[in-house]
Length: 339
Image (cartoon, rainbow, N blue to C red):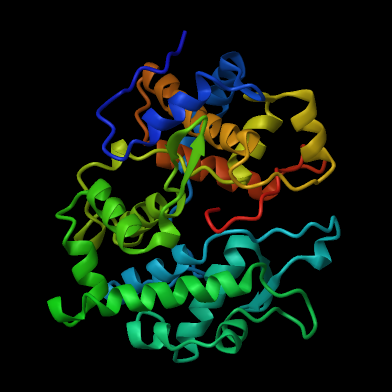
């Protein structure tokens, strides 16, 4: 029987604070038998887990890549549409094909670099107008839906610009200064990011207690590791202490395969595509259960000698979520900047 015992110290407090939720949850539970079946299916796939490097991801091997990733993860949230019609989603044309969701964001930012925009420049970021950002993230055809929550994305880019500008006195490349100052610790970098940039401070309150998720800040560290092949600005000595990235696609996969079990009321709310308020008990319980389901998957795989990071398991489940059959239950819908 898997337990909520911590597998290691918890410098970010994500496992500890989400454990508090799951010990009190009313609408979500984890089915350990279903998790073990998922682990069997994942076992063979983990050896072929997708690589970070993709043409839609900008990477030139320099600090500019780190700056591009910081912008990417500042904007990496809420791509879905309430309409069941796929044509009503935000979509971007890139390299002769139409992308949506996260990949549309990545393609948009890579396109912006190709068009000569120095998106890693703090002054440029701080001076962006809403029209500038709308053009950078422009949809594939005129009058098509724009990216959701555009004003909040503009706010996040301005926040990045101001925060990086404050680091300019420490060296010529503020992004490099920011990452290097963590001393090779992903946890230290994440703590610095959520302190310096409030839009990354992904926390909630549940029965009066703070619950930490740090979804986008944790992805930032994992993205840097992937982009730099674990060297230089991507070299971290504590990636094993990161957790899954609690969003809406990974719980959809886990729920669809029976590992996350929802109450009847929550199931009906999600099936009807009704909004689940950010910070509601049900939304927090879904995200907390996602964290621990991926942690338990990691432990189950380790029992058979397959040692993987929780972040790697999350990455594979997220990829699975990009090509689910139509019969799969839909994902929960929450308007938030955190995922």
